[in-house]
Length: 428
Ligand code: CMC
Image (spheres, rainbow, N blue to C red):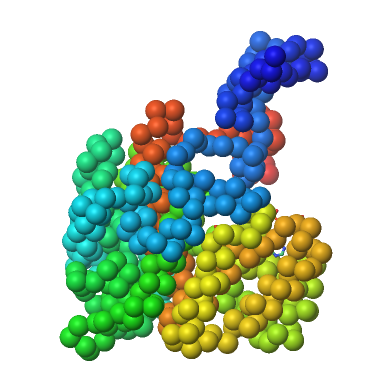
């Protein structure tokens, strides 16, 4: 009869071990009993970049990379993008179920009434260089928020955690908008509680001298959908940073600063910015062929292509491509879209990309939409961070509640020098 175990024979000793298999995994710690001698530390698994190691059990986001499926708490991403709002999605991620009308109203009210930041934060942002990258400002100011909320240290208290999660989701757009306006030398626009989450963000970005800012409903909806599409993506680089740093029991503002820093990199959240730079560099459809050749030689990467998990079309990219045309109908076509579509077509037919299963990812079209909304490139990763915040927090909260989790502390395989005695400077 089939058993849920794995039998391993250690050919160094001839001994056989039976390891339990649960949820398609063995526990790496079970390998430690496999030893060649009494003082042997025991067998470890070696897995740089966590290519095949589950660091947690999770009930938040499901991805099937081969079939191009993404679900939050079981709900397919395209259904959420079509029917839900970002705050409804944030509630779903944080609390596990879609909210009732009353629960959503209460959640929306709480978020809306935590959007202001202390004036010291505004002054803090003012002190950054005039051309500071907004993502650098975000990393610094999210971390700085921890000094304003010392209660956030009480990470084992569920009510305190809930309050900090509300604060973070509410204040991220405010910090992002302040960072954007600092770069442009504009006075800040304060939050407007009459507007939706995304509408208020547009208000804080774009309000000029008008008494009341009215967001364009198509842009407001598109932004909300983009936030939904970015809201979670299970154990990606920034989420792993959030969990890893949070596992030291630091407050969630500091952990979120670490997650933002991870997201800043061009291989992660910085890719949307890199895509627009790449399309500008290509410049014209006639140059695509030579650019693709350079990518195949490894001289450049096609930004917005490829994914560690998706080996099929990223389901988020499908929704975004459609959204791009809705936005272009409203504000005019982004000329780079023709290059993007032609590049996608050529790459999807090319043997190099087919063989490696490299498809457009979420970042391939999102930058073009942001650009058409009138946003400069270096704020794109900041928009990703706003969308991803509920996911980071849901994952952090799940980690805190998970009795199996401890401070994250990977092992290493030491290959350095063996013991040697110190040599005085004069003798070297
Ligand atoms: N352009 C050209 N070749 C590529 C690309 C690309 N964008 N991505 C992967 N490859 C090749 C790579 O050279 C390698 O080829 P070979 O086997 O001949 O050495 C093969 O495909 C496997 O690549 P990898 O680097 O081992 O794959 P990975 O899982 O470590 O990397 C990735 C995933 C997303 C970092 C990578 O595909 C990449 O750099 N893409 C461009 C950056 C990008 O769009 N990032 C956004 C990711 S989605 C948003 C997010 O979650 O942050």
